[in-house]
Image (cartoon, rainbow, N blue to C red; front, top):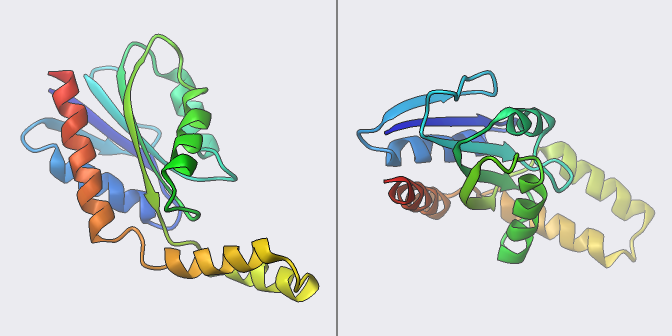
Length: 169
């Protein structure tokens, strides 16, 4: 089987998950790259993105819109994490960019650390609105995200990849 693993990563979180997926693909022929990668001659496309305001990156959106007649598995990382409900919400948003000629096999999301500028923004907002409980939760979530993707996330990504490959054979 010929597999493409393409991703857009800013902080390295999504790249780490893409590398775990690559490792789990075993003896299959792998094309590993960015959004410029040609996926026409592959059987399965793993496509991953960091989360940009609750959606995939613009680069991933544009790539998805151009893919046709493929089996697709979606993966990504999100600073706000830990909730399968939230990850399903992200999946619902990203799948709107995928033409119906494709078959979506599944999705995998995990939490990823965020740039320190995000925490700085939260702290600045807290000084302006100290009573805002949502901002306090956001700061706590930022701290929790600092250790992700962790070893458990990587293992779950590998399991996801193996399941997606089995669905193609």
